[in-house]
Amino acid sequence: MPQITDFSLFLETNVLRNEFGFQYKLGLPIIPQVQRGQVCKLNALSVVLNSLHQFREMPKPLPLRKNRNEYAYSMRELSKEKYDSQVGEIYSAQVLAAIAADNGYPDSSIYTENQYPLYVGRIIAAMENDQAPIIFYDVDQSGEPALYMSDREHAVVVAGYFINKQQEECFIISQWGKYYWVKAADVFASTSQLSKSRTPEVFYKYDSGWHDLYSTRFAPPELFTKAPTERRTAHEVPKGDGGLKNKILVINHQPKVEKTSLYSSHFTMFSSKESERLFREDLARKNIPRTTF
Image 1 (spheres, rainbow, N blue to C red):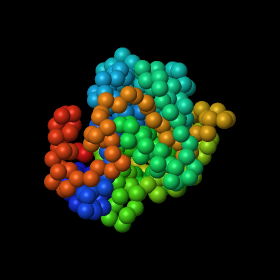
Image 2 (image 1 turned 90 degrees about the horizontal axis):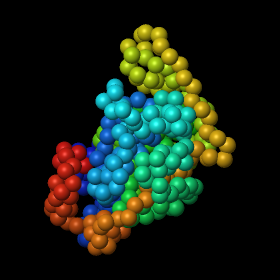
Image 3 (image 1 turned 90 degrees about the vertical axis):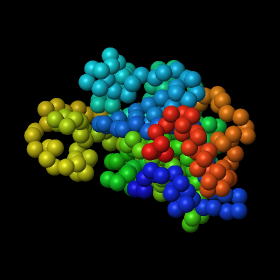
């Protein structure tokens, strides 16, 4: 999956440019977080809440994990105690919204968009409102959207939108502690085939952590030479919940940017040098490491 490490190179190589400049759009500034374990949905939520805390003066959320008792309580522990999660897995956008409320973010919106133009339009609208939508789809081993009927269900944070040189709509996403880009059509195809009530996973505890049976196919076999020490089965999504198929989760807040700011127009239209200068200034102002977009 294509990773973004140099924003100037990314613009020149991938983003469509016309007489007005590069066609791209950035949403809420975010810092990706490394994922450890079966917590991709919680990790995506944690990324958004921590970004709102750091950049928009919203409440400080719980840490994602206790990190071997570094913290007394965590978002993962909350999900296990209050929402019947077994190892940090979440199958419902409604549960994620409830966890956000428990962390001081009671205002969230869950959208189900079954048509491609509405799906992409909803995500763009969120970014125009200085937000970072969370979306859900299956991924293959490299992180590309895939068609696995929820067996590799994943969550990412959308940080930006752009038109590539082939004039295809694309998203800039945060996952696994880094930034990547992906075609919007591939994302929509994947989210549209998710199950509304996926089969509950069975998790096995090894020395390296918790693994579900399906994911062991993608991990080094030496991790599983010893027999697992514990087994847990996830709970089924309640009927009527709808799971994560075509869902978009937006944590709402009051944007503090002016209507004329970098984050407010439908597209950001600047020359290459101006885009780079503004982006680097924004990184420095928000203390985002320059080595990652």
